Length: 80
Figure (cartoon, helix red, strand yellow):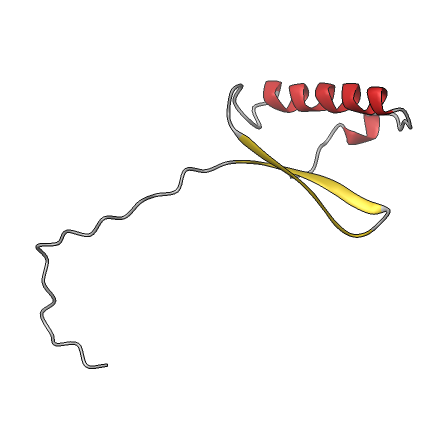
């Protein structure tokens, strides 16, 4: 997902300023409907080069658990 307002965020070198800008950007994403407030997110750092890193933020999806019915029987014999 690209962030449409990324160009509006000025670059900075101070960690406090970066964290503040990141907080504002995330709040704008929540207000824009990208995520719901309180939704669990997974945050990772990606990129292959030292100076070419980016942050990936994606919602954590619940894993579906499949429990097959033990009373179902196969109709054809299994030949391995």
